[in-house]
Amino acid sequence: MKASLCLATAVMCSALALGACSSTRLGGPPVRSANAAPLINAAPVEAVPSGPVEAAPLPPIEGAPLAADPMAPPANPDIAGLPPAPPPPTVMAPAPAAAPAPTSRTVMVGNWSAQTSGGSCRIQLSSSPSLDLYRASASGCSNQDLSKVNAWDYRDGEVYLYQTGGAVAARLRGSSASLSGVLAKSGAPLSLSR
Image (cartoon, rainbow, N blue to C red; front, top):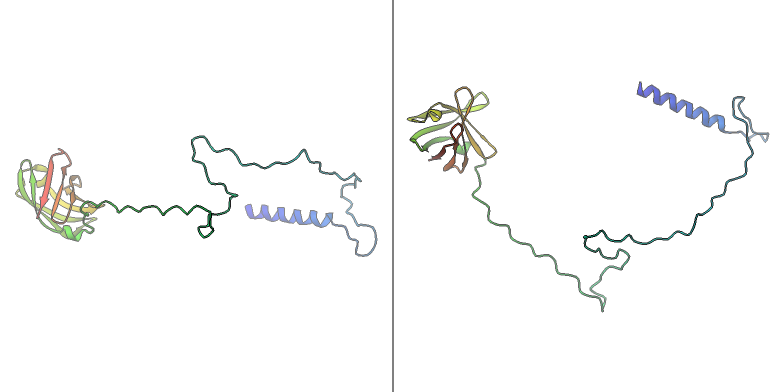
């Protein structure tokens, strides 16, 4: 529909342009279509200036720092009499970063000792896939949330422990040797160490 409308418009514009042209190749009077509008001999219109045109820079915005004059010549330290160029800005060294988070899931695989306010137990994080997660197991955990852990995942620098049914049991962050976080339901602190 759009293409046919554009084509029809182009054809009409071409026809109007060709119809408006007059042919004087043969030396005769201009040839006009019978449907063409009558010619009107009108006096040419002359543009009249409304007044002198002046150019001036706009005033600075209130509170904004003043900019250098754009029409001024650039500073050249080789030319005598000009002020020297300002020194380059000082680059500060970045502050030391915190201990980097592990960058892969594989460094998290293995046996962990879990510590909660209720005691300690063992958590095994496996590299065996289980649907879109990885297998995990818990042994000797008195905490009900930890005792049901059967899967885990590593996303955005965090280890997620999942219970049967897919609920998040805990979320931890740290290094490949030590993780700390909280249990999801109670908010109690949890730490894992090798």
